[in-house]
Image (tube, rainbow, N blue to C red; front, side, top):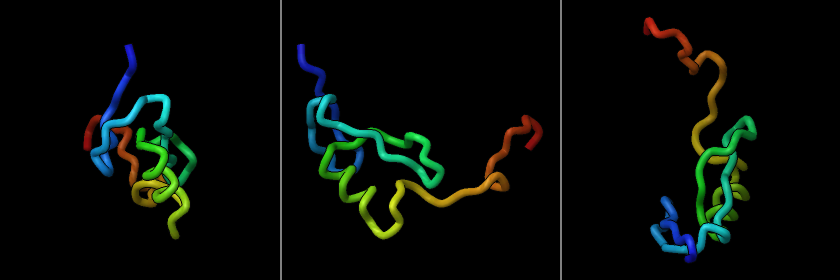
Length: 64
């Protein structure tokens, strides 16, 4: 049985094997998108998916 998924960006239904993970500003896998959206996102002016963040943006304490 073939594994089909919906791209969260363009909403097309594609084979899972035709999807790639985008990376955030630190190179961490961010989300699974179709190959066309991957190219559009990763080769954009920003060069990464999502928003830029630093350690100051992370909240690892339970008491926030």
